[in-house]
Image 1 (tube, rainbow, N blue to C red):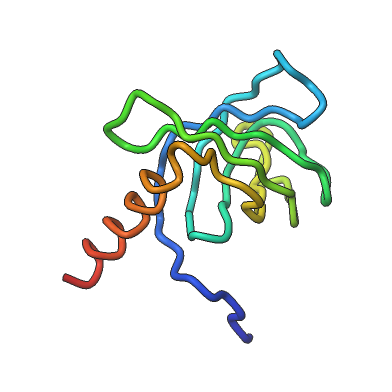
Image 2: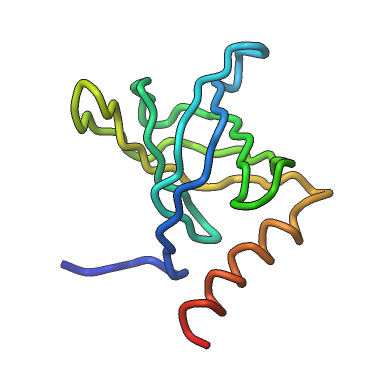
Length: 115
């Protein structure tokens, strides 16, 4: 199997608040499973459809402030009734004021793995 990823993925378990692009106040909790600079894999009890746009408030480990991401769902599959769905999404945009914070979080994971 070919791995066409451009960036390393890191296993994470960070809290997320998810919401569809067209819904302002409907937040769904979720947890990140892995993360790269281009995408995120997360679990939630909601089935997200391929091509659907979502806003994610990403709460990085040890930080009470979130970084807002805009993503498009690439795939989603049911894991189990209690676990819900595992979903893969491509990151389209990162909140501009916190972009460096998000990138630094990723590079800290990279540094921890290799140094």
